[in-house]
Image (cartoon, rainbow, N blue to C red; front, side, top):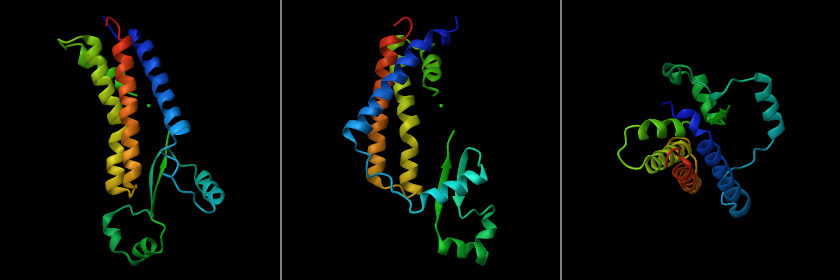
Length: 169
């Protein structure tokens, strides 16, 4: 039997629980209020990016298509002059699919396994990138810590919801 049609309720409820947790974190606790800084001239920057109509992806500034070009004085000058930035243009969740596959062969309670795997997958999806952002992208460590705490809350909310509403649990 294909378990995926039965997953609509746990997936929807997990999404709602993460949304509620996120709303509380961002609107009540507000521990992210100092994580992001405003750019001077934001409107002109937005207009320039919009004019380029970029597809979703990561766009480094300055761009260097080949590492050999790093020896080019013009490329080195662009790095010295700045800004050096990484622009992310964004466009979703695999937690339920992973939980369904993991619970298909588990000997423990399917709901418990689905909750643990779904919660872990959600934690990884929301939090893993934050560590590399702290190491490689210059994100401040306080921001990384708050992102990981968010991911823990979202993972717990998803895991608890999957455990509660998992079909046959």
